Image 1: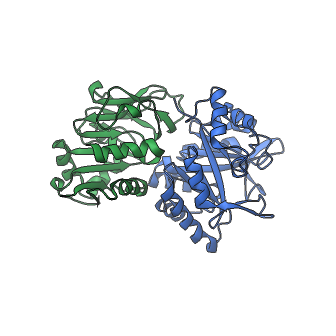
Image 2 (image 1 turned 135 degrees about the vertical axis):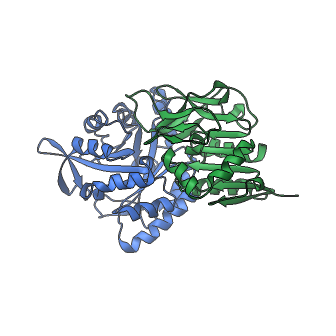
Image 3 (image 1 turned 90 degrees about the vertical axis):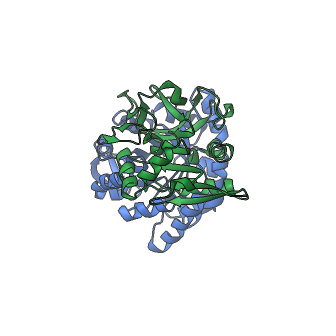
Length: 209
Length: 250
């Protein structure tokens, strides 16, 4: 049987160590192989791509350009191929990011990345918070509803279509914590830091879709 | 709703968790990797580990310990102690730390906070502040409280925020190690003057102390002895806080 190929993009935006290890543990003994993507790649040779990110929107976008990852990634996403974006890896699916400077995103899920509106909030939103599912999904099953995940971010997805929001979280306001369009998923939290529920989510993404 | 984080802190020499405030009567509490694994499994929301004797010889073993711990836990890991420049920060992040905590180096060279947060993002730069009352003022101290700096505590807290720190780890040297509770007064002064998360540290001895720590608006509560001595399990603390209406991850 042909092995499914999972790509993990290293956009030099935070540490990929934890997510790398989580994926390896999940695919051990199963018909999958993991490849780290650090430069231009053939987008037709991947079955799934995971892009973790930390830090700034503009930095990740410019890194992806610099490493010549952006073009094949765009084509991959426009084909509605399976993708999981984590934190900034989710945010860059939007049209525009307004962190530091205005930056054009990948434009896959319409909306903008802007700062939390409430000026009295403690920022970054750092720690464990609950996700509330809007609907059941093959990967984000009902078992994840009302579970806590680890967040660390100051910017959120805004002006997004309601139908693209799979789950929301409350912090001074409602904001999207999981977005989905076709086979493309984005999570605002860090599943690789979110203990067993986080690992289950990554496992579902890899094995169920 | 955002949960209050319960954070066990491991003071480490090489690969051992130790207890001993002034480098005298240092007692080995256990193997660092084993203890980290235990805390991660038993409900810690985050783990903090500090190299309390960051000599050149011990450092290599400490970094290896960070790597080993990062491999066995899947909760956030904050690492500090002996961080003096940008390359130390990069080394720790590469070893698997999610956040790096800077203390005296930031006091000596505040620009380090800006440089580090620009390079790695504010979210992974924690500034640890040790505070102490001196002549009716709250001052910043370094070297475990032995050296009082010219910095006023609140001015410094505001400054580290504006330089790009993503979090403050606030230890009161007036209450640390005494187990009479957090320094509520000092913590409230800090939390009401900054808008970044503050983790309270220093002084926990009872369950009620955790609750009083929460009331200071600190979003993380750090403790060492009460956990290492097995006086309380993390679950016990969380159940208690939950019964008092504090949001925690159960």
